Length: 92
Image (cartoon, rainbow, N blue to C red; front, side, top):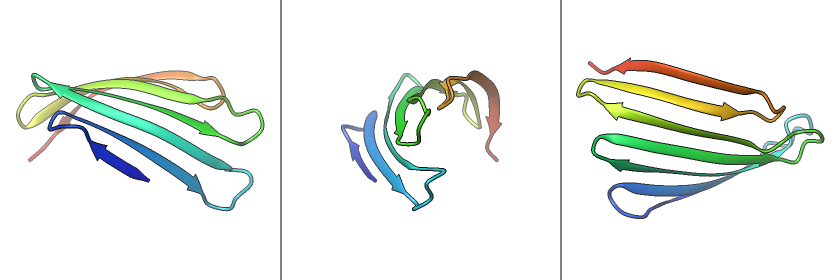
C-alpha cells in the first residue's frame, strides 16, 4: 500500500491485497482521515473481486479527550450488512 500526508491534518492511502486465496479474493481499499479541533474524521471504501461481494465502506469520527478517546463509526460490509460502533479508548 501507499499513504500520503496531504498536510499535518489530513492523509490518504491506497492498499491492494492479494493473498492467493480465491475464497478471500483480491481487495483494493482507498482511505483517508482529516483532523480538526481534536476531532478526527475517517473513511474508507474497499472492493473485492469475490463473486457476490458488494463494495464495503465506512465513516467514523473520534474525539481526543486527553488520555481517552471517544470514537464511533458506521460500516457497510461486503454482504450489504450495516453495523455501528461507539466506545471510549483509554491511554495510560
